[in-house]
Amino acid sequence: AVWDGLSEEHRAILQEAIDQYAADIHAWLEDGNGAIKDAGDGGIFTFATLPAEDSARLTEAAQTVWQEEADKSERNAQAIGLLVENAKAQGRLK
Image 1: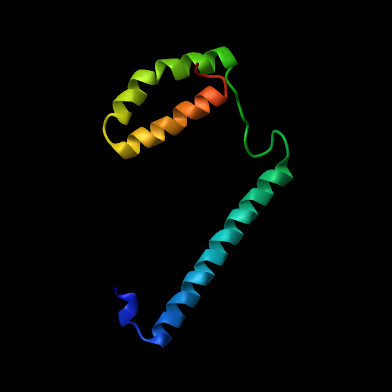
Image 2: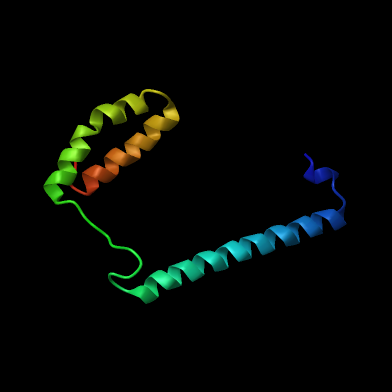
């Protein structure tokens, strides 16, 4: 691997840069989350929900598409399985 070919000095430089990048991203996300919390209800985002009946009907209607996607690969099948489990747990699918 390329990493193995680097000197200890270069590894340290890269590790420090990666650590700083991760810290910067974390701080940026925390700032954004703080702004959302500070805005309170009706602040930055307006959330809408569907009536339970509509949500269930949409989930049921999606089953054909979900199955088509699941048939494409094992990875897709696993992802669709998670969607189905969640829909059942939330009462949107029987």
